[in-house]
Image 1 (tube, rainbow over the protein chains, first blue to last red):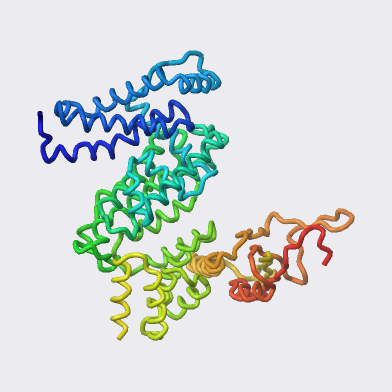
Image 2: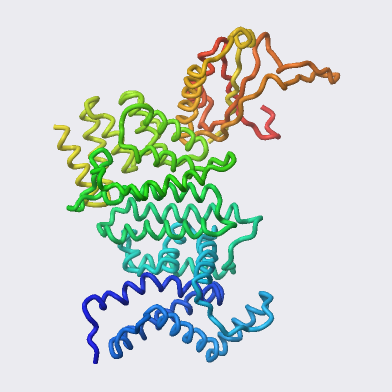
Length: 414
Length: 122
């Protein structure tokens, strides 16, 4: 009996993360939204086989090919032996206009990509909430486990399971097509996808969860999926390039945001040597490609702001430009986060007193960032007000890292 | 929440005699406008960023289909543009209108009008 070596013990979990999503997506695209659970079962069984077989016979020379071959066989067996399944799928397929029932599962790289693109539009569907879209994307497209998703989203496994169950139900009920929409619909549907990917990225970037590796993976997955859209002609629109640029610029500071002790490092205190220059460059490239005709989407504006933040110099026109961009961003579409950031930019250009007026007008009491901002603005203007706001923020803080930052601010007021 | 149109009026003579606007002045004006509109938008009170209304290609039609050149002028004043905002009351709308940069211009005025339904006979 072969003993799996230490590094091989990580092999199956690694493969699971990389390949689960791809296989489920291909099978689900093939059979339709109603068979998502069956697709997941087939792939889970495949990994179970791997765990059993590789322990006994050793790891195959090409583990991925092994997995794909077994998944394919499992799926075909399902089709052959489960008569109800076969009849139903056959009926669905002939109704879709396919003349013959092709007994094949195409796991080629091209079909994996095509299936993922189609699945993105099926999952990021307006009939389910954006939180449900994100959870479903994390599970089906990205292959994260229920545990990992619950941990990152700071909720329970039970909640995630419920959320996924209801979302799949709804998509089945709506008979959502697993396809890239046609030119009439694609504009609107793409916007829904982009919002989901943006949120997915932010979950990774801003998450209060302590697992840094997991959060970084969320960002990378959001970027990978956005990149798929860029690689496809009908979805490669300027605003998608802008979103990609935004993600690159933000992600470039990922390593600098949290120090080795797991503490949050504020922008002005970050070690610039930990900023990823290559990612900033890639962001610049995507940004240039985002400039096309006169299209100015909210992603263009946010990417421009993020670009300014890749320049650590604090003098000159930096904050005037950022303020101008936030003004444009809000005039285009309201967002509480943009409103708060605008107030901060206002402070950097016009000073604390005028910024306090702008900030208070936002009327976002009960919002952690609103109170953090007012706390910051009141420093040396009215330290008692500052303390009150920081204290309120502390009550709203969700993570030890956030609490640590606020406690330090309160200390500094004495 | 109700909607109000803020209609910006300006003195025609002042515009005519103003002369060239330097890029720096243009930039400064833009900054006033985007700060003001951005402030309203930041409070989630902007319904529509509206439009500036042009002068050169404008006409006025009166009864009898009499057409004259230029915008309609009340004394020497004409409408420069508008935005639509949301407010609980006209007083709240007026507060937001007070920051409007048109008021720096000579004869600048902001007219605040509620958006009413077609069957509202107020």
